[in-house]
Length: 422
Image 1 (spheres, helix red, strand yellow):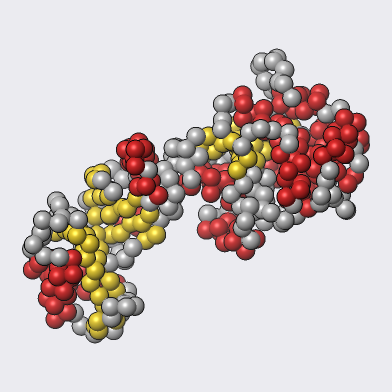
Image 2: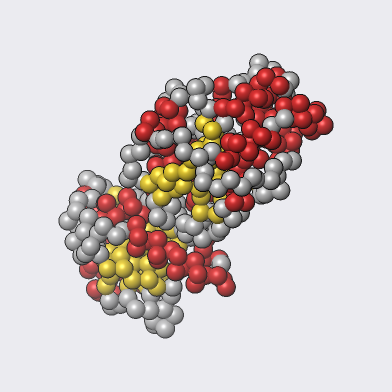
């Protein structure tokens, strides 16, 4: 549709948050806050929150740009361009005919099928939902050209939302992200590589309302600044789905840890021991920042380190909950979401991360915990892990930043000299 349209409002419907009963008001406040923040650049709009509905009066603003922003908001079930009118059947019918004819013209439909649906929350109105729909349809049809009625699979469905204060008319329904309002469910640390999986799992965690920060394990000179740039660019994309559009990234200098594992441990167990070291470091960051969980992009059986046996041995290093949003996803599903959130082209840039540099030819797919513990004891990793934690670099990435990985200074150490308990 063009900017000029009879539709002068956007009707928003909330998603899973409506089942929250006692906590619904808290979720609603957060959802309203997030909508207003996301749409702050649109100075002319007026927002109105109602129970189970949210209305945006466009007042001349470009609805297409507003919808682009709504597409980045978790907690929304769906939204529609709509028109507000009064409760008389004749007014509803006349306005509906104009809306449908405009829609038909904009979409170049010479012939089409049609039906009317009505939802009536105002039970004091003398007509039932079915009676309203039939009466409106009988008045609208003579005003339309090239139309046939099809109540089963129509090209156009006119929706009449019959509420206490007014009637809202709409045709199209745009499916939202669903989930919960951003940052309503506690906080988590997402283990972010430069691949396909981790940005998708981060996005899914954000969609469920988790306040996400990220951690990346950086191993120069084995991994380049270009690989770090991938991670920064991915987080910039994903940050659009967070309430303030900003995500903290903890960059861990991981080279010495990997070198120690490489030189001291059985080659078969390199990946298992490396991932255990990552979880130890991530757990320390979670505890220091009072977060609630670790988020990981693992999918069961996708690679050797993601068998259930491997996950069990890796999980042994921490009692912090580990959330794996992609655990049951196929790769095709992950790719589909990666493209949807505009991360795919970044993820496939040809720069390796630390997980792909030291990969043995025959990694253990069913590692034994007792063997892993003996290998870790040989490696004496505590000091290099502690040193890595003390030299973590924290930066904040936003949706509109263009941070250059080559400009980040890794020489400055943490100011505190406290030793972490490992």
